[in-house]
Structure formats: structure tokens, C-alpha cells
Amino acid sequence: MWRQALLSAKEMARADALARASGIASLTLMENAGGAVVRHMHRRFPPQPVTVLCGPGNNGGDGFVVARLLKDMGWPVRVALLGPRSALKGDAAANAARWTGEVQALASSVLDGATLIVDALFGAGLARALDGAAGATLAALGERKLPCIAVDIPSGVDSDTGAIRGIAPMARLTVTFFRRKPGHLLYPGRLHCGEVAVEDIGIPDSVLNDIRPETFANDPELWLDVLPSPAWDANKYRRGHAVIVGGAIMTGAARLAAAGARRAGAGLVFIAAPAKAFAVYAAGAPGVVVAPLGAGRKGDADFRKLAADARRNAFLVGPGNGVGPETRRRVLAALKTRRAAVLDADALTSFAGRREELFAAIRGPCILTPHEGEFARLFGSAGDKLSRARAAAKTSGATILLKGPDTVIAGAGGRAVLNGNAPPTLATAGSGDVLAGIILGLLAQGMDPFRAAQAAAWLHGEAAREAGFGLIAEDLAEALPAVLRRLTAPLDG
Image 1 (cartoon, rainbow, N blue to C red):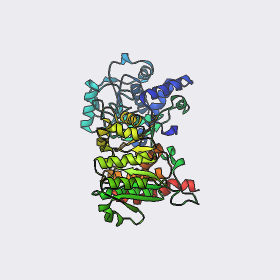
Image 2: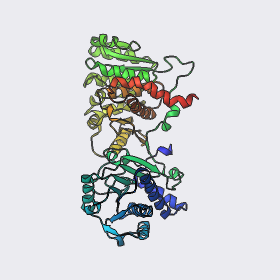
Image 3: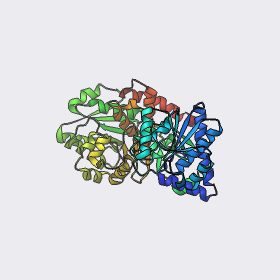
Image 4: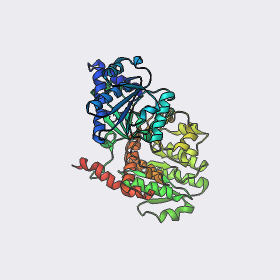
């Protein structure tokens, strides 16, 4: 699990300190970091004129190592420093002293004649917007579109949140050390990182036992051991009996969700549909059972009767349901069972302005799957994405899956996972309905909400990659078996 840890700036500083306390010299760590950057550059680029932009701290010290090693290899190297050389301290000063070439003041003119740039201005922990010489030089770098290698993280990218502090270069490659940082996966910072390479510089993994990180990159390593697999003596009820509330007009949403739930392994899927739309649902996939709901309060009673069967162990409310009191009543009836529930789309917006009513009803395993607009209606929009998702999970008592190209899954206990495999082809109508259905199918088979949300987000992204360009939402469920086969093949022996 620690392999997927993402470290905040404070946690990375703690890792450095623990490594030093164990007897590893900080100069050795810096030398190893600079050497790792040079190895990546040597593999990707032929020798050419390079300008290394160095900052006033340890990131700049890494830059001086890069410059020295490249020069030793015969590369033409120019070094530019933000601030006076005399102001450098500690390891940065030591490595600046090892550099025998000229050190120029940082300005856009230092880019002249270079065909490759190394950004070693600021790494993790930047706490202010870049301006002055640093801002002007990075602006000129962007205008000239020179290829850039970032040391640790592109300068100007907040390593904890992915926010851009003033300006940041668009790196072709970012070489980071020990573990990735949240800003490597969170937008917009992720756009600036390019390819991200993680290098071992000598910090022992054991330091993570002291740090106990709470943020991770989504990977099957986190949940594959509990991914449901049918037993030889399984039957459809033992594999889970899921119920999806269907809408009267946008009938496709529930049907897409049903396909996702079935492909994820749910043994039986019901769509509870308004009677007036029964024919539409009944004409769909023959493996889905359709239960008609009467109009108004009769429909409420019909749904409660449907939910009373204890074999129906997971509910999805929201996709295509419409916003209003009827959807709220369906949500509250599902939550009253204290069985697993996924609340998406209209189920969330229906509680805008009355969120306390919703949160008070959450007493069982529950996942909320909002996009940014739906999230803001329940929780507001202040703060960075990772912090907002964590706070929402704590406030609601539910697992939060905050959707986007950088989906965040947050548990009520504080742990969070960032999903990084979603391709842009998922930006198509209905893809979120399939995701909700995949989550439902995993919950129906007994997976816990936090890991079900992680697994579903990853599987959803891989299914999109499997389908490729031209993807429509219907393709996602069809692509899921191939993804699952590849994923579970090692487990089958």
C-alpha cells in the first residue's frame, strides 16, 4: 500500500528528515536526485544546449547537481540563479560551490540559445505566487515553447493541491523523488507535469511507517484482494441483488447503470420504474427485471415494499430520476433500510438546501458520487478539491467520489485516493451513470464503500481505455469483462 502513497510537502520534508536521522547524508540525497534527473535527460535527449534555472533553496541545489553532471558529460550548460549566490545555504550552497562555471542572474535572456530547459526553481512546498524574475522567465519559457524538464514538480504548481500559483511551465517530463505528490495528479497541476517519473534517491520506505500518509494514488494494489469473485457454489442472490430507481423521461440513465452493475458482477438487477415508462424499460436488456411503481404516494408504497425484501441489498437512486420531492422520498426510503446505497445526480441535487435531512438519514454504507456542480449544491465550493472531498466525507458520514479527470475518493475517516487513469473520452453523456452502476454492482457483492468506489473508478477508466476513441457510454459496460479478465488473470493462476 505504501507504494501508492502521495506525500504532502510537510510529509516529504518529514521523509527527508527521517532519512537524515537514519544516517543518510542530505548531500547524498541531493546528489542522487540530480543524478536521477540527468539519467532521464540522457535517455530522452541527445547532448544539446541546456539552461538550468536554479532557485534559492534545495530545489536549486538539485539544479546545480544537474548542471555539473551534464557538463561533465560534455553538454553545453548555462546556469541561472534566482537571487544572489551568497544567499544560498546548506546543501544548496555546497553544490553551488561545486559548480565551476558562470552563474547568471535569472532573467528571460538566459533562455537565449538553449534548446532544453531544466526547471529547478521551486519544488514541493511553494507557498506564494511566482512573480518578478521567476514569473517573467517562466512566462518567456511558455512563449518560446522550449522543452522543459521539471525537478520534483513544475515551479508554480502547488504540490499539495495542484493549483497554479501565478504561473507554471508546461513540462515535458517531471522527475520527482521517493513518492509522487498530490499535485502531480490533481488538475490543473497535472497538465503541467507531463510524464512523471518517480526516482528512488535513497530514502528508506520504512520512514512511511512513521509518517502514516493518508493520501494515495488509485491502483489495484489497494483493493484487488477484496474485489468480489463468484464462488463455485454461488447463486444470483448470493452475488447480490441490486435495485436501481428509474426515471420517467431520461430512461437511458438507469439502463446504463444497470449494464454497469451487471458487468461488475451483481447477480440480479432490478429497475424500479414509473408505470408509465414500464414498456420502455421492459423492452431493454432481458436480464434486467423491471418492477413498476405507481404514481405519487402509491409509488412510494410500491418502492417501500420492494425495498422490504432483505435480499435486495444495494440501491442506486438518482440517475435520470428528476429533481424534487419524489426523488427525495426514494432516497430516504433506500437509506432507511441501512443497506448499501449509491446516491448520484438528481438524488443529490434534490437535497440542495436541505442537506442535513440527507446526512441524518445516512446510517449504513453509502457513497455519494457528485460532479463539481452537484457537489457545490450540497457542500459549497471553497477550498481545493482534495480538502473539499475530505471535509464532505466527514460531514456526511458517506464515502465521497468527487468526479472529474482527477476523481477524488474520500472516506469519512480521512483517507483519500486520487484516480489518475481516466482518459478524456469519458467526457460523454451517460458515462457517470455506468460508473454509478459499477459501484452498485460491487457494493451488492459485499465490497466496502471506500474500496468499491476506488475499484469502480479505476475499472471505469480502464474500460474507457479499452474502448478507445469513439467511445460512447454504452461501450463502457461492454469493455469491462476484458479489463476484469486481465486484472484477475494472475489470481486465477
